[in-house]
Amino acid sequence: MVKHYQARNHFNGSVLIARNGKIDYLTYAGLANRTDQVKYSAQSKFHIFSLTKTFTAVLILQLQEQGRIHLDSSIATYYPSYRGEAARKATIRNLLTYSSGRAHEDMQSLAEAYNTTIWPLDSFIARYCSDRLVQIPGTSFTYNNGDFIILGKIIELLYGEAYEDVLRKKILIPLHMHHTNYLHHDDIIPHLDQAYFHHDTVPLTFYQPTNYYIDNYFSAGAMYSTPTDLLLFDQALFTHKLLKKETIDLMLTSYEHLGDVALGFWVYAKKLGQKQYRLSERQGYGYGHHANWVHLIDENITLILMSNTNTVDLNKMRWEILDLYLKGK
Image (cartoon, rainbow, N blue to C red; front, side, top):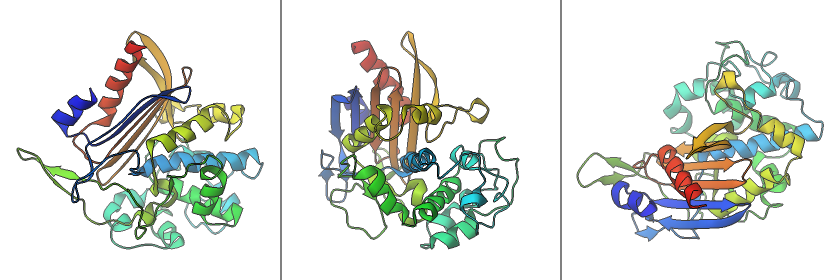
């Protein structure tokens, strides 16, 4: 099936399937860098964009376990200088579930917010994440980066350290995720992939997206990783090494009125073959980069798909891969 996607849809990237943390299938396909014709390999690193949000959610829940954050306290409780209308009306839980009720200026002015210049964090929040309220917090789901950027700022305030340093100390170093890190636009990272869009021509011709500043995505999307490193993170979560079982249960409790969003994941039931599975999933996308992470909770089965072209619908591919794998088992 992977070869089919590569031949028919120009799939470039990686597919990993594991059960109980043991890899059953891992492959790399296509080109990580078309300019130099560099093939994907075990050395390749992938931009993961919004998978970063799950790391941010874990850092918040670690603070909750320490008694330093209460999910139903307001933004202003931990971020007194925040000037948005949501300051005393939206809670940490609302931020984690994209239900702060803000107008989400960062998504409405996407190119200006992320592509034109590097914003100091406080300036970015003041300009793009301090909008008026347009909905009652907690009542409506509106996907955005700003809610998680505010959470990243709160993490910095509570630890008195940069978000990226907290990320390393609390997650990456303890889990030995040596090929995962926070990314700045001017970093030189060996084996980091490039992403591509395509023109609707026959045969397809590819081009690189316009410049952007990954720094502006901050705690909502500024990380890179590898499939095997993400499996370490996956297993640390689902075997309760990073968070207590009761905290993971809280993390995996979905909000049906908010589109089944949970804390850092979406969690819902999905029929695959003849069986219903309870699963968590998280996606990341930006400028041609795609990452797709699915975990079958009761079976401890993990699927990680990563790609650098927009020629394949990973949302469709993931169910076909999982269905085929489960039939084989």
